Image (cartoon, rainbow, N blue to C red; front, side):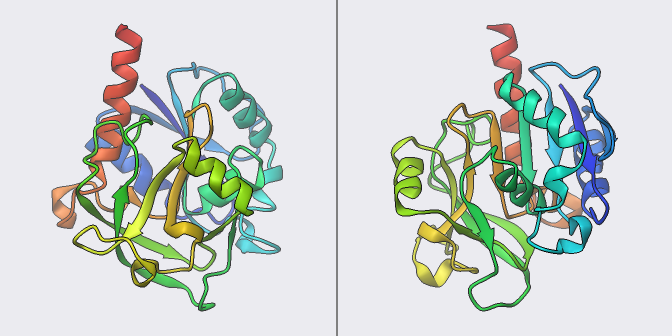
Length: 237
């Protein structure tokens, strides 16, 4: 599986992601500069990653300017043709701004930047990045954001719930989901979602920061393994 990691001005998690995809997971991975206008060499079974950071300094709204970078037209077309697109933190914000995912990411409820480990509860196995995850296990994954509060109107939230598009919710270490476990005030405690076609994923927590033993936490590695195994199985099938 080939991965492309898009680099915007202000991206700061691109090398982290490239390290995990290439060194830890052993996949082909290339950097893609935001001014590129096409995605040559990428097929529908490949994945474009929009990494974390502060694209364009988070001026206006986080992701609002990056959404208009030249490469995003190609990313949107790639997604519409069935290619996998995964946005993490700032990447999630960009995907929402670009209309590839519903909703928006607003300022955290307490108006403060949050950088800490949180726990996530997987809500569905019906997506490539969650297919092999346990629905009972709480995953410890870091967050680092000031605009991570997922917001959508009630009809959209209910549609996400009804269509099984909510991938992760914030929880306690024992897996309990309640307002006290929600670090930023996200609607319905949502930490990650996918689109209706299940090929575009967005999440605020950083699985690439919890994907190898040297960091003392490999809870995030399962998302990458799940994606690789699911796509490999589909290719064989």
